[in-house]
Length: 268
Image (cartoon, rainbow, N blue to C red):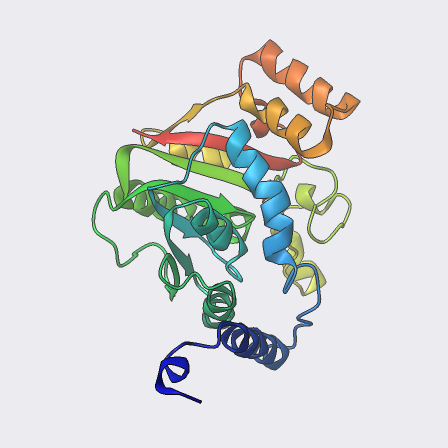
């Protein structure tokens, strides 16, 4: 091997090593790297989140973006691929470790990083640091007693006029909790958890979310919700059209009424 060849990095070898590290960490966490929601999550979000962003007119390119609750980094990676400079945060240290391995195997460490933030009521960012933020399937996991403080912190770290996309957020209005697939658990008072000796996963109450948004964020682009459904599924189903019609009749964004809350918010 000559000197010139010696300094040329073996890209394929580097990617293989990064992929192997991702798989190793996933298995350490008891996860199957081949699972759609682990190793296949980026591909899933590329075919879903990307179209939702387009439907809402959100263009990540050149923006400073925050992913709140980054999980294994899939949504952050999609936004980075679309040209954003992304910071993801998660309360789970293991998730952050796997997210950074995921970022590395997609060769995007120069555009996105994941940080462990144990308490998201206080994040290590400057006021107005981000002009775009996303909360994908995460707000339903925030302790309801802490949601107001979390939304206040998101308001602080975003620029005035910045956009926050909330999506994939299980709603407590739904008769079937979308993650556990348990029927009627959303309608059970939390006091019932003590009776059964377990903590049931519930969706997020739209009323509680609306209360925490007041004076901080306003809902925009109401009409984009149905456009996003068409972009994802090729048509608007009867339930989608019904939700949209009811929302129009009572003059609210249809994303408030869907089984998964979906709203584009502008920071006031």
